[in-house]
Amino acid sequence: MSECVRPPGCAHNGDEDFQPHPFGSVVSAESGRLVLELQGDVDVAAGNWLIRPLNKAITSGRTELLIDTAGVTFWSVAAMDLLVTAAPAARAHGVRLVVLADDPRVRRPARLAGLDRWVEVHARHKSPLEAVTGAG
Image (cartoon, rainbow, N blue to C red; front, side, top):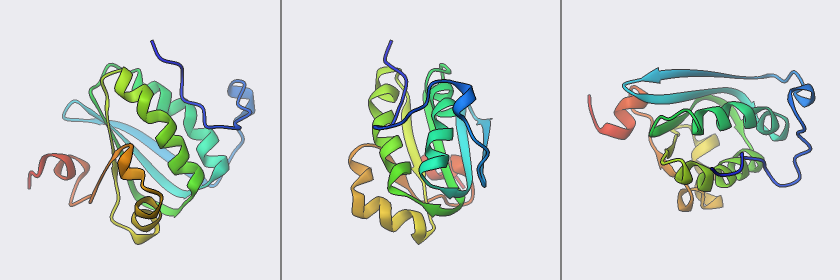
Protein backbone atom coordinates (compact mmCIF):
# COMPACT_ATOMS: atom_id res chain seq x y z
CA MET A 1 0.00 0.00 0.00
CA SER A 2 1.31 3.48 -0.82
CA GLU A 3 2.22 6.12 1.62
CA CYS A 4 -0.41 8.71 2.43
CA VAL A 5 -0.44 12.00 0.58
CA ARG A 6 1.58 14.73 2.23
CA PRO A 7 2.72 17.86 0.42
CA PRO A 8 6.42 18.73 0.70
CA GLY A 9 7.11 20.72 3.83
CA CYS A 10 3.79 19.87 5.47
CA ALA A 11 4.05 19.67 9.25
CA HIS A 12 0.86 17.60 9.61
CA ASN A 13 1.24 15.15 12.52
CA GLY A 14 -2.40 14.21 13.09
CA ASP A 15 -5.83 15.69 13.57
CA GLU A 16 -4.63 18.09 16.26
CA ASP A 17 -2.77 20.08 13.58
CA PHE A 18 -5.87 20.90 11.55
CA GLN A 19 -6.87 24.52 12.03
CA PRO A 20 -10.18 26.18 11.13
CA HIS A 21 -10.00 27.87 7.73
CA PRO A 22 -12.42 29.81 5.48
CA PHE A 23 -12.62 26.83 3.18
CA GLY A 24 -15.06 23.99 2.83
CA SER A 25 -15.35 20.62 1.21
CA VAL A 26 -18.10 18.10 0.73
CA VAL A 27 -17.56 14.46 -0.21
CA SER A 28 -20.39 12.65 -1.96
CA ALA A 29 -20.85 9.51 -4.03
CA GLU A 30 -22.29 9.85 -7.50
CA SER A 31 -22.71 6.80 -9.78
CA GLY A 32 -19.94 4.87 -8.03
CA ARG A 33 -17.53 7.81 -8.03
CA LEU A 34 -16.44 9.99 -5.16
CA VAL A 35 -16.87 13.72 -5.69
CA LEU A 36 -14.86 16.10 -3.50
CA GLU A 37 -16.48 19.54 -3.88
CA LEU A 38 -14.15 22.37 -2.88
CA GLN A 39 -15.41 25.79 -1.80
CA GLY A 40 -13.63 29.01 -0.95
CA ASP A 41 -9.92 29.74 -0.98
CA VAL A 42 -7.78 26.67 -1.59
CA ASP A 43 -4.46 27.98 -0.31
CA VAL A 44 -1.62 26.50 1.78
CA ALA A 45 -3.76 26.17 4.92
CA ALA A 46 -6.63 24.57 3.01
CA GLY A 47 -4.19 22.28 1.23
CA ASN A 48 -2.90 21.03 4.57
CA TRP A 49 -6.49 20.52 5.75
CA LEU A 50 -7.34 18.57 2.58
CA ILE A 51 -4.73 15.85 3.18
CA ARG A 52 -7.02 13.68 5.31
CA PRO A 53 -10.15 13.71 3.10
CA LEU A 54 -7.98 13.23 0.03
CA ASN A 55 -6.27 10.20 1.58
CA LYS A 56 -9.63 8.74 2.64
CA ALA A 57 -11.01 9.21 -0.85
CA ILE A 58 -7.97 7.60 -2.50
CA THR A 59 -8.09 4.59 -0.19
CA SER A 60 -11.92 4.25 -0.26
CA GLY A 61 -11.95 1.44 -2.81
CA ARG A 62 -13.62 3.64 -5.45
CA THR A 63 -12.05 3.83 -8.87
CA GLU A 64 -12.62 7.51 -9.57
CA LEU A 65 -12.19 10.69 -7.54
CA LEU A 66 -13.56 13.91 -9.00
CA ILE A 67 -12.25 17.15 -7.50
CA ASP A 68 -15.01 19.68 -8.26
CA THR A 69 -13.68 23.26 -8.14
CA ALA A 70 -16.96 25.05 -9.01
CA GLY A 71 -17.02 26.76 -5.59
CA VAL A 72 -13.33 27.70 -5.49
CA THR A 73 -12.55 31.43 -5.23
CA PHE A 74 -8.74 31.10 -5.10
CA TRP A 75 -6.58 28.21 -6.35
CA SER A 76 -3.00 28.21 -5.08
CA VAL A 77 0.14 26.47 -6.20
CA ALA A 78 -0.05 24.58 -2.89
CA ALA A 79 -3.38 23.06 -3.97
CA MET A 80 -1.89 21.91 -7.25
CA ASP A 81 1.20 20.59 -5.48
CA LEU A 82 -1.02 18.50 -3.21
CA LEU A 83 -2.78 16.97 -6.23
CA VAL A 84 0.54 16.28 -8.00
CA THR A 85 1.74 14.60 -4.80
CA ALA A 86 -1.53 12.63 -4.58
CA ALA A 87 -1.39 11.39 -8.19
CA PRO A 88 1.04 8.47 -7.61
CA ALA A 89 -0.90 7.31 -4.54
CA ALA A 90 -4.14 7.48 -6.52
CA ARG A 91 -2.61 5.42 -9.35
CA ALA A 92 -1.24 2.89 -6.85
CA HIS A 93 -4.78 2.44 -5.51
CA GLY A 94 -6.30 2.22 -8.99
CA VAL A 95 -8.04 5.58 -8.64
CA ARG A 96 -8.57 7.92 -11.60
CA LEU A 97 -7.98 11.45 -10.24
CA VAL A 98 -9.86 14.16 -12.16
CA VAL A 99 -10.01 17.93 -11.52
CA LEU A 100 -13.18 19.61 -12.80
CA ALA A 101 -12.55 23.28 -13.53
CA ASP A 102 -14.41 25.95 -15.49
CA ASP A 103 -13.42 29.12 -13.66
CA PRO A 104 -10.31 30.87 -15.03
CA ARG A 105 -9.10 31.30 -11.41
CA VAL A 106 -8.56 27.54 -11.43
CA ARG A 107 -8.05 26.64 -15.11
CA ARG A 108 -5.37 29.24 -15.87
CA PRO A 109 -3.01 28.42 -12.97
CA ALA A 110 -3.60 24.70 -13.56
CA ARG A 111 -2.68 25.09 -17.22
CA LEU A 112 0.36 27.27 -16.52
CA ALA A 113 1.62 24.86 -13.86
CA GLY A 114 1.13 21.82 -16.10
CA LEU A 115 -1.23 20.10 -13.66
CA ASP A 116 -2.68 18.09 -16.55
CA ARG A 117 0.62 16.19 -16.82
CA TRP A 118 -0.22 14.57 -13.46
CA VAL A 119 -4.02 14.47 -13.23
CA GLU A 120 -6.86 14.82 -15.70
CA VAL A 121 -8.35 18.31 -15.93
CA HIS A 122 -11.81 18.69 -17.51
CA ALA A 123 -14.49 21.33 -17.85
CA ARG A 124 -17.26 20.77 -15.32
CA HIS A 125 -20.35 20.90 -17.64
CA LYS A 126 -23.65 20.64 -15.76
CA SER A 127 -22.61 18.03 -13.22
CA PRO A 128 -19.39 16.28 -12.18
CA LEU A 129 -20.62 13.04 -13.77
CA GLU A 130 -21.24 14.72 -17.13
CA ALA A 131 -17.71 16.12 -17.15
CA VAL A 132 -16.11 12.68 -17.21
CA THR A 133 -18.72 10.67 -19.13
CA GLY A 134 -19.94 13.19 -21.70
CA ALA A 135 -23.51 12.43 -20.64
CA GLY A 136 -26.16 15.10 -20.79
